[in-house]
Length: 431
Image 1 (cartoon, rainbow, N blue to C red):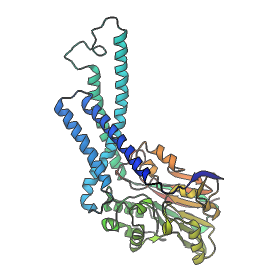
Image 2 (tube, rainbow, N blue to C red; image 1 turned 90 degrees about the horizontal axis):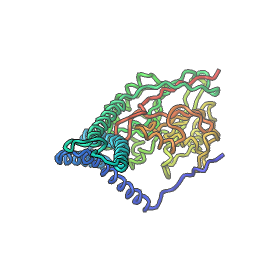
Image 3 (tube, helix red, strand yellow; image 1 turned 120 degrees about the horizontal axis):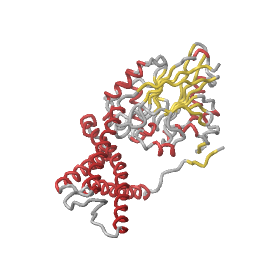
Image 4 (cartoon, one colour; image 1 turned 180 degrees about the vertical axis):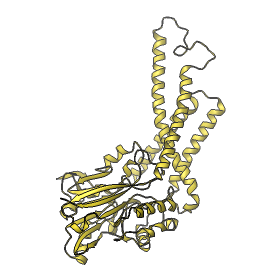
């Protein structure tokens, strides 16, 4: 049965402005909160307060600048050391803010307890929960100094760990069993690459590492499920050169993700992928052969596409039928978002336990990405509200769906609680 989730068109022009205004107010409030607890509440000397405030402002300006410069057509490779540093400042500030919320909660309890104690004491010489030396710092202030230093160190340490982790994608084995799989394809291996996001934060050197790890796994087919790039063709075509070195007997197929659309030139990127030897599945499909046995691979673009770029699984099925005849017994769908597996073909999404368009067209296996597995804790909670799954293998709308956490990272090249991966799916015939 269909769910109540309906695709929505673009909002009016006032909505983005209102969202931006709210965001700026929240940002200003968060900045004031951080500066207060880092610089003023611990009662540092004046020069220390000025230094801390300046550092926080510079970090925020660099982080925001790295985001605002993204639409500009600048020499990305030249500026990447600057943009990487600025982007990494974002999670440092985010985790610093979360830590300071905890410090502020303890501080409020401390001050509340001190107030109650002063009010209830018949006679006291206490200045702050037991301090008697008027020249000594109150215990609360000493606590704030130690706590803010500890929180700052932890935020930097966690982010550093996440930065290192983000540059270490690992091959993750996944087994999929189906009674529909032709026996000659038993043991067939598919490498799933998603969400590499070459751009301001990750370079062609990282892509070379991903390509080498993929080739070492010796897949029969490589499926790239979108979000390869975060920039224009002119900015990134040199960085994308390693894609031409991907090796698999049945080649490399690719579908576009929402970030190819965000570049403003998805068609140019599809053309660039073809020049690198990739097979672009833009509402289309290919047939894989093992003797007289076949399986189909269908591919559609991201759900945010419009016009000629709108995803259309029915069209992909029709095109493959025109070129290859009747559908194979086992069919694979390459699509960027797991949410698209729930598409009923009429602009709505079925419940995960329903039957979507893919299942009705005989799709047995869907290969997806987009979620990043949340990328950085605690974003996982937000992803679960927008997508039916976070990562792993699930049955969605009658289709076995493999959702990858992705090999790269968007924005800050940092991963915390969601390590990067290259799923290697091995197909098996059900006994």
